[in-house]
Image 1 (cartoon, helix red, strand yellow):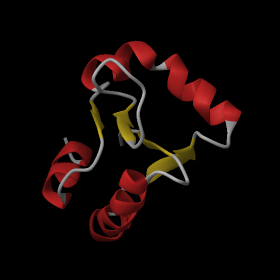
Image 2 (spheres, one colour):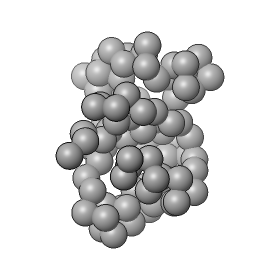
Image 3 (cartoon, one colour):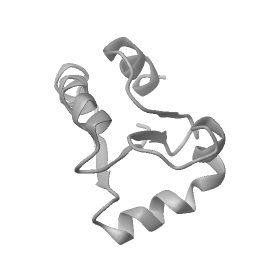
Length: 92
């Protein structure tokens, strides 16, 4: 099983819109995403920064929220997407 991470931020409106889709994905598919809040948790922010070389090129050269990362495949996407896109990414 691939390790999936969602880097998110409490005040991020895009993160708030994605949370119900992540909840649905976890419920429907039995997939678990590790949700790591980065604006108020420096340890999580450091972890995200450690993946800068993988994340930034796929996120407009920056670290953004929300960012979704598959640790094994290094597959990344950022921002709001439709449920089917989230599901496709998580089940690759």
